[in-house]
Length: 297
Image 1 (cartoon, rainbow, N blue to C red):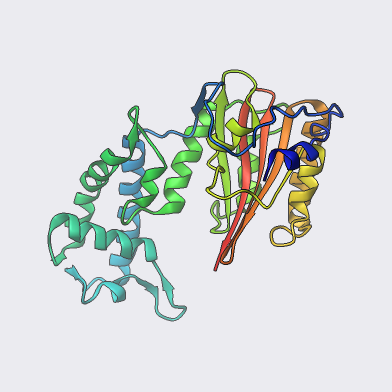
Image 2 (cartoon, rainbow, N blue to C red):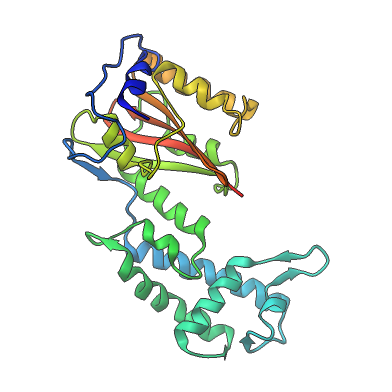
């Protein structure tokens, strides 16, 4: 989207009523020097992630062993049968299957007893995390680790973020995430964009880059301010005015009215095989965070 289109998108700050100034006559989504230093708050320690992986894997393994007591050696030949938790319902433990495959490769073995696999889990994850660290903390690269449970890893990021982030007045970020992702705490098509703390008021270009929304292509649309929240709620391919989003939408709108949320932007990308839309917010603590929807054919 060109600068002229960005200029036309200028409107009221979320719920405040004053105008957002165009930050420059340069395109909003082009690389440029960062003026405002920022820190990602969702940075779990490697030990935290390794411990969580080990506990989760051990619990899943114990449940599978209970259901298949005669399987004393796990191999490629019986792995899928071992991971069937309930033959009647077809309930299957995919994270366990992926974890076992990864651990067998790590051990260089074709088969192994459940106890050996559990004992190897901690060392495997510590080794894999070494390539995913920045300043000693785990980054998003960890989601590429073979056998990692994405829901579990996302929870580690969430706990790290909420230990460090400050809640805007009238909002609990942990609750916002829970309502967005649902009771299961994880949805393939939705993502909570964890807070990034800026040392001063950031430009939108910096917010978009910090939250990972600076894609290679220009966006289909950009809506700033007060109209952004409603645009996100009414997205034709996203929420479509979902009633389940209405309570959270109202609290975000109230945050704009009371000044705890300072800026809001709705940004949309789409292609032949995907649709991506995000609501990005800057709050009173100069923290940027957001809600994201993603579909891929």
